[in-house]
Length: 420
Image (tube, rainbow, N blue to C red; front, side, top):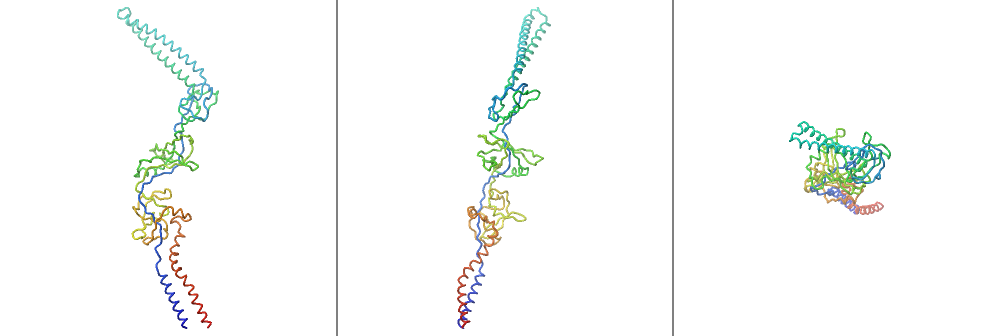
């Protein structure tokens, strides 16, 4: 009987102990916090552009004639002034000879007229020649001089046309495909296109930006010092070009069909590896934003009204702070309003944190997120949200574990007493 009483007392004591442990409050949930400070961030715009030659010149036949031969190799680099084509110069040489003969005749007429005019000037004071004859002699001299100037101009024109029979490169660059074969009549009526020379070092990058983004960036208080206007080029295979481009033009007119503003950058291409017409992705540095905060994307939450973050405030109490996000960049939100220097933003364990609740903040770093790739910081509601229940139940489970053998031991004598 006494054994039964002792067992009952022991069971009552264990039951009371278990109730006290169940009533004990759970410890504050552990969260990872990032202490933010204002910083400067480059405002980058990712856009798509198309490469274009820096200069492009059409090589045309400027005089009529039969194309004799092509001198250059198609697709090769040529220098300004290099010979590209030759046109049959026979007719042009004949025209030059005719002009030179006319010039010689005009030169002779002018010499004769000048001699007669000089003689009349000498005789005029002695009255051996009438004033009318003097005037006629001087007029004939002037007409001969004008005819000589016209003959010289015709000769110069013929010489220029003869020079055009040798077609030269107007600029340095890469010569394209031949458009007309040898033996064809060119330059008859219209200027015949023979080939095109493109300068591909440097290259232009033509791209556009929506008028809304363009006006927003222009109105932002950006530091447009060093680095502003530089453009990074990402090629189609994902590699980054080793040369940086520079913005050199922005349009002031919005295209009514697309609602975009045209921009242009200049890209060095010393090895001539890039070719015109290729589409590339570019990241344009529009300037530096000062006094902004960088917060991991997992820490920024949203409701129907605004974006907000949870901050471990005074006394480790959770405070909700509405923020203004400008854009996402490299896995982080750029926040322009809502945070202050030194705020401890909760990054991991966000589902455990509730406004006005007390938490146990621990420093958070990006390396922690990389060490646990299976769960992004603060972005695994299922596993993280069940942690408080597990943490609260853990002490009771630990304390009750030794009690199980005692209960089993206590029940064994009771069974023996029942048998007794």
